[in-house]
Image (cartoon, rainbow, N blue to C red; front, side, top):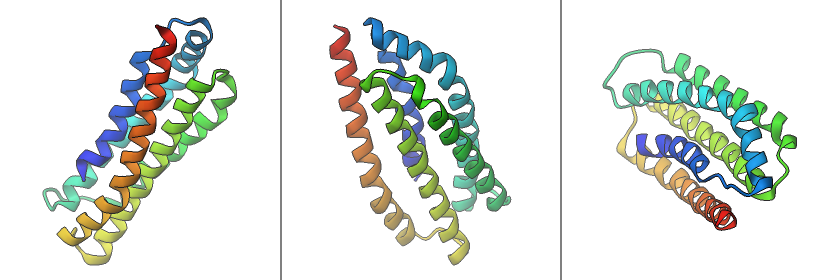
Length: 162
């Protein structure tokens, strides 16, 4: 479960390293890195911290309020999506905009996954193996599909650069 939660963060940040030198995409990536990325990375860092806390609580390896951590994750997810949505208009190239919109989808899907995992934990009083498998099956396929789309977008950006 932890792998799924952390995968989206890695994919979001890894894609930025393949920015192009082509003028239009370079301009968009500059906008992305100055106007969008700093707040996004701050939010993702906090989401990751709280996701680790939630994961430990769900695995009965730590005590704490799963509700408090979930509220923090939800708030930072909503703030990140709002910030990104508010800045989408600044991006001009299709490739960078597609990457940006895909990042929004990752954040939203991850937030849904975390919320559903916590709801399940609260419902059963623990995170059962059956429930872990159900959540992995439900969200794993969707995250895998987003990963494939992300790879295709990044490959397209990279091909445009060379």
